[in-house]
Amino acid sequence: MSTLSSLPQPMGAQPVLSNGSVVWSAAGFEAAVEATRQTLEGLHCRRLATVMDNGAAVVALDEAAARAGVVHVPLPPFFSPAQLLHALQAAGVDTLVMAPLALNAMKSKLAWPSAAPAVPAPQWRAMDVAGEPLLYAKLPFAALPFTPIPLPEGTAKITFTSGTTGQPKGVCLGAAAMQRVVAGVAQALAPLGIERHLSALPHAVLLENLSGMAAARQQGVLLLVPPLSELGLQGSSRFDAATFDHAVRAHRPNSLILLPQMLRAWCAHLARTGQRAPDGLRLVAVGGAAVGVEVLRAAQALGVPVAEGWGLSEGASVQTLNLPTFERLGSVGRALPHAQVRVAPDGELEIAGSLFLGYLGSQAPVPAWWPTGDLGHVDEDGFVHLRGRQKHVLITAFGRNVSPEWVELALMQSPAVAQAVVFGEGQASLSAVLWPAGSGTSEAQLASMEQALAQAVAHANQSLPDYARIGHWVQAQHPFDAASGMATANGRPRREAVALAHHMPLNASFNASSNALSIASSNASLNTSFKPLTQQVSTP
Image (cartoon, one colour):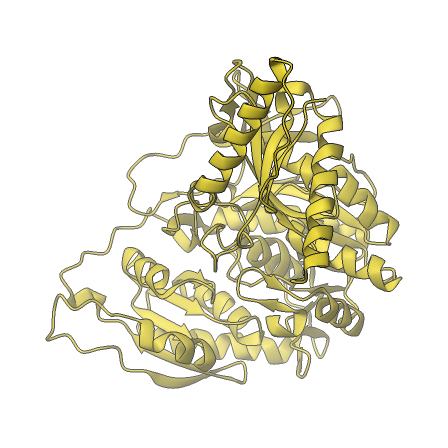
């Protein structure tokens, strides 16, 4: 039995789902899911990919695929055409369903493989799912000189992560592991009495797909699924906090899931407008990247019941979570009922309990305990504390190990810093590329942002040991997002891309800093004017 096919369904006319304009009763939505299952079976679908906005249709397709034993490959609308084609081919997808708007935006860029000219391009046909008009196509990959990679036995869903290199990586998930996560989240949240959950992240994102959408269905609460544009979210990284705030007040959810940058932007909007979060909120879970204690405290002061968690695709989403009733700021919470966490001798966190079946295209077996790549520790009360990624650890010229995420988090505690990436491998001091939270193009505005960033660096340095302080920094040329190529779709920076884009200003800043220190050590004086976007930080 697959993950969602065994969900307990409320009876009668109880509302279970709303897209903002249509409210579905339990019986009505059950009929929509069953009709969708029959449609998939009639199409002889075995591997289904969906590229859709949030709404009733994507929920119905997800549940119908599970009932029909169809492998579901939910793909986010913000994937590039190249990423989309890679995922479709790698997973051997035979049926693709898209919203008309998504198809129109991407159709001209979909360069279907031309290795077999005799194979016709996909023919798009209309279909209706839960009252939403969609388009589907049977894909010709089976007729092309391309052999779909066999899936691990029991694969029910494939989630593609954009990864740090931009090439999507397929994580194969089994029904049992996903159900353990859904049940674990539902059990942990039961004392909160949640009655309305708002999906604020794309349903193709595993965190929302299982911990939000599926867990809400498991609990029998009302699932609110308006289009993402109505929540102020455009693509993977454009977010309008004012639009989001209006939507939250209109939909009156008790729970929602956000990415850290969304939380920061929303809190900045609340503070700027003198508002507090709606009283009905009982849980705002935040994951995907580190948040920081000062941001969490600021959110709580504004009435946001924020709870930081931690998880990964290889564990079928969330593993740990703080709860409003039992939390420890600075941690990512305690292991949820479905999860086990331990610390390896080298400090790497390992998990068990809801592991994936394997990577798409890899024959490597999945061990009983999965090495997460995250460094951290578990305190005496079971709260998990992270200190960065093992592969990102820098070794300075003085032989000190520094996790860049630790320093980046210290920088982003300032409301002036929206994003930060720290470098320093083999260097005497660390450097940083910063993107400001403010905006403006006038000379006065630029000067104000530069001053605010400088103050943020100075403040962070005061809280850091000498070997982890920022010696020099530059202002980023573009925000770190998928559009600029300097971040993954979920907001994690692509460090190599950031370094490459800022190679010259970073070197100029480093050289200027080195020269200044050298001359200072010779008791010489120096008056150096730096470029507006490049700053040296005096050693305390």
